[in-house]
Image (cartoon, rainbow, N blue to C red; front, side, top):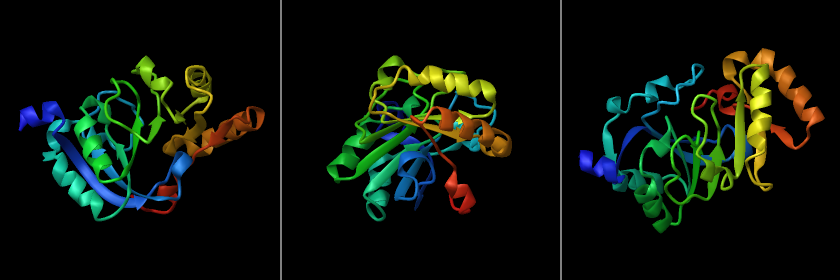
Length: 205
């Protein structure tokens, strides 16, 4: 099984579920989420820390994952953890063969593998993105936990392409204190948009 994981033919699947996309450009639309275990980026405010240890999540063959997806949706969101710790090419190839659109949410801390219809880049200070993902990002989503994160967001904006959508999203536990900061920045810098974790308000996964 380890050889299959190394090749990307199997992945440490934490969970897979059909729900409403809660954040960013595609918020409000239905999608099937594939959450891959394993992450060493180490965001202290991460709300899925149970995803960090890949050993806790059993390797699942991508054929089995794709079969489950086909029953629910023609849009898949691959998230984590940090999915790019693993080779995403076998999974995306099989999904593409089924005519499924594929989105990824990633910190960009690892090299980009796979073929994607939408790339949401959510960079983190602890492990900056690999340079080649910036120009391919369709969406830049920066999590705002404090004032300094606004400066970080502006720095990251300089690296993405002009087509890239720009989002500032409050870290959930700090949303009451950070929302005024975000609102002020967006009003003064209208190229930015506000992203909220609407799935948490809706009480869905």
